Length: 138
Image 1: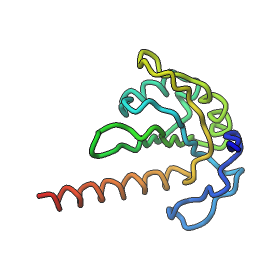
Image 2: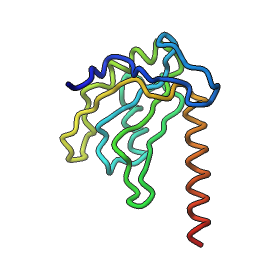
Image 3: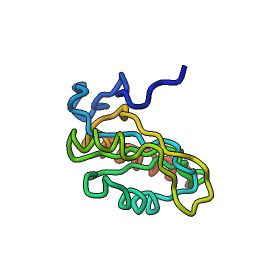
Image 4: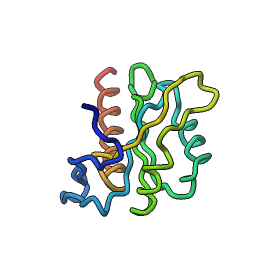
């Protein structure tokens, strides 16, 4: 059976930023799913700025396939506090990206990595991995 996306991901944790698990009542990071693959980071920020959470988030990470340049269909959005997280869990569900041509409807769940520090650590690790991969190709 399909999991209930309104419930928090059972494995939500800090992902190494602090080394300590985060309790559900401290969650601040959502995973926005079903993003059309050709949506860019800039377009995602524009989209989020047009939603009800426009003033509530502080970090956004849109994982991208380095070979194709397209996103992987999901993003991590960190909200400034737990109340913002709870609001985003409802506000970001069931939306469509305008003028994209895709019929995908957004879904949202708790991210497996929680908090601004964890998302920034993931971004830095991915930058380092991309730089190392580029250096190997030279």
